[in-house]
Length: 95
Image 1 (tube, helix red, strand yellow):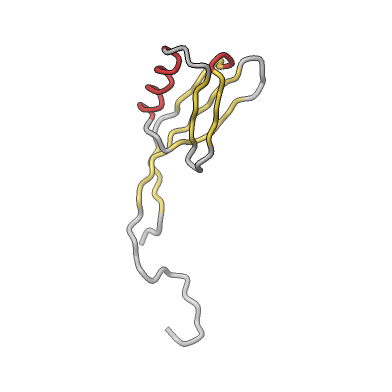
Image 2 (image 1 turned 90 degrees about the horizontal axis):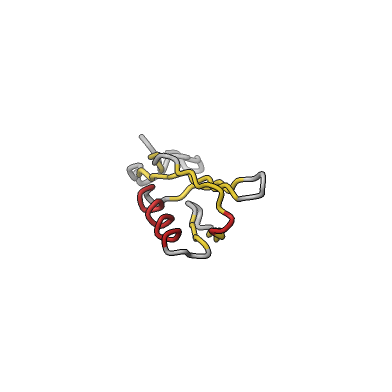
């Protein structure tokens, strides 16, 4: 490469990583809106934590999305919870 030239290629090649995301849609009673977000947790773990909270009579359920945001949803206001299938996405540079 010539001095003063610009290269957009990464200097050290790292393999792409696969990150799995699960889309969660939560319907809230008496509203026309849904809460939609993606999480990095496996769908089975999300389903177990929701079921455990509802079985225990918890007043709220807490979720964390793929960006690090947290959501606290009152269980009394839950109309439905839809768990999407796990999707694997490649993250990083692919050569």
